[in-house]
Amino acid sequence: MRVFDGILLKHFISLRFQIVHEGGEMTSKKASDVPLEFHVPSLFKRPSSRASHSVSVRRPFPLSHGTTTLGFIFQGGVIAAADTRASAGGLVACPAVHKITPIHSHLVVTSSGSGADCMLWERILTREIRLYQLRHKRRLSIRGTAKLLSLMLHPFKGTDVCVALTLCGWDKLIYVCSDGARLQGDIFSVGSGSPYAYGVLDRSLSWSLHKEEAILLAREAVFRATHRDAYSGNNVDLFHVTAEGLRLRKGSFELQCKLFPP
Image (tube, rainbow, N blue to C red; front, side, top):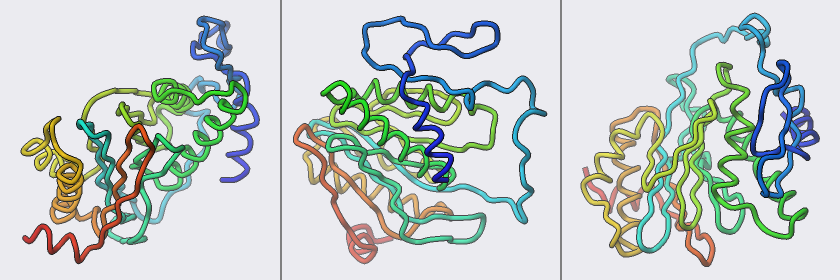
């Protein structure tokens, strides 16, 4: 993972937001006044056929990815919440995984999919945002960050890369997945437990919620999903992102059982 990370970051120094194909090769084209330049390395060239993809190693048993993550906007900022169970098929691989990653002081990312893929792309994204800030003396916007991540992920469409990230800024919520799709909205829930989380959110979510009400609602939505979804469970991590920065709101399984009895 470290070697692959280094190769990607070494070549990401000069990529434009608009990419065109010339003679089958991916090249950058100056198309806007945005001073963000990255180079698209040969590593990201779209393979001509499925046969040219890297050889897949057969797993001893199928791995089913499962999780419950959510994010929503209300009058007091943005709430991001996720469970902490990492599953591998029917196995609980780890009960204390952090699926919400702070990228900088005003942006967190919720992750679902393959744990290794999500960790790698979060590290790459953090590095690129930091390089942009050092180079241009200002931080890349949430929309710019989502567009950059989408461009980096799109060449891996159709491969085994499995990444679904929700970028939670203090005033925006943008979902990006490994086929390059990019969606902006006011509420997102991703993962195998998301239908159950949506059921709780659709019942009580409103723009006028107070901070403590929004935090309690997000915690309940994830906690209820863990009771119905076998691949989600254990604790609930929660971040509150505002214009002043982000804050981690810790909880415990015992507290959740006390707050939300069956």
